[in-house]
Figure 1 (tube, each protein chain N blue to C red):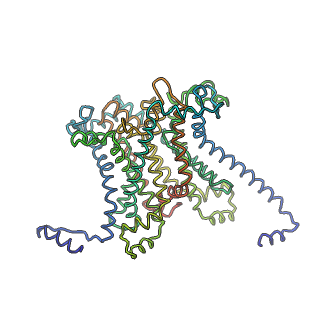
Figure 2: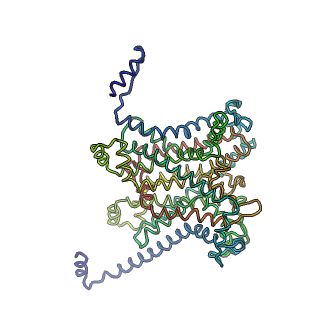
Figure 3: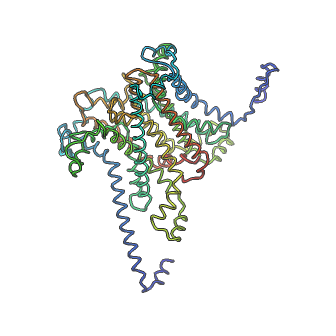
Length: 325
Length: 303
């Protein structure tokens, strides 16, 4: 059957054309068929837009070209020159935004990892109600992000918010802090994002802890290692593979997160909370400069891709093969 | 037996001193660990608690400088009044429709692909897997700009409305969730012995039949867990919805922000709506938590 189809196909092609038809097994073709719908959709919504977005970053696309984008004048690297030049308006804001994004990312990832690790270690002990504790810890991660972020917004209110109230009652502050406006907004989004994601890190690390063979600890004990020694020389090295995964994925996901800053601070926050995703969104859809927006998105994408590449080569590529999980 | 022997062996001798002291330290450490875990849980659950409690507060109870952890007086009026301000029920239904259809489409398409990755070897497999992972690294705004143009242009050139339609959002969301679902489902399919599918084939099942009749039913808990995540992702999506999903299809995630008006925010009602949206999901999570946790932690490193 396959043979016939192939010969029929080759007959239709003149002899002088050297066609190489890869000999695909029945199973292989079936596998490709299974993958077709998924990759077709991803082609339209993921791969095509990236190329398209890349193109837009080289044209001057504003509101007047939305319905005939192909007529937008090509300006080469002008958009990139503008965003990287700190003397232009957009450039100055872009650099500020880049700095704030970096603070947000580093702060969040440190918070998420340390809190996650602490939680995982605490969960990895024998006590009653362990399953319940594990379930409850995951709640911030499971609850719909929009409503939890709105709840945080309520708690972060200046005069009537719970957080200022608590800080006042324990005597840490006098009066009221502005959390969502001004220089502290970066702290607010970092706190909320950390709260939302540390459960994920905790569960990943918990699974990592569970897979550490008991005999390693027994051997360490015979060698006279204490609690700290076991943690330092057994636990941490064993957790390294899963830690790399967590940190890298979390860095990328923090870079490209939109929901938390947008819902918590609104579409036009103070400079402090103006992380890249929010800034690009604003710039593209409030000012209708798609070209500049696309150029900034491309920069963000390239940064994310470099990190993803490191993730791939170091984690999946085999350095950590057979790791903790 | 062994312990009994040891006890006899110890007899009246006194290694008790050091044993007591280690026990004491152990006990102290244990108490500390419990306390610390309690703090973590408090941190994790505090906002949820505040959400539920504030939904029972009257306006003056919410807008006070001394907010309480428990309402001084429980009001249920928020749960009735929240529907009247704007079409909140429609927003809920929109989200339900969009997220449910997205889930069905995603699971159907993703399980085919996940099955291929789980059961077959073919040229380019590694690269395709990598591209699936890569899609998780794409900043949404980079896709949003061309998508906006694509939707507008489809509407103008071909005449099919895409912006502000159910099918537009469902198409977008399914594609966003497919890579993630493939990744997760693949982990579940991997745990089902290959022999089962092969046995089904010998019994005359087609290859696709083996997937739908044997593998998928066995992976049902995993599929349920994946479905929940897909549903959650679609339910939570804000970026694309804020640009491409207004008017008649406004989803809950966008609509709920209408409790914030120019002049004031209706916190009590907003928290009531939030509670209504959260409780069913938490319930589902508790129901499916075993496959969810295993799905979260498998397949992330190893495959």
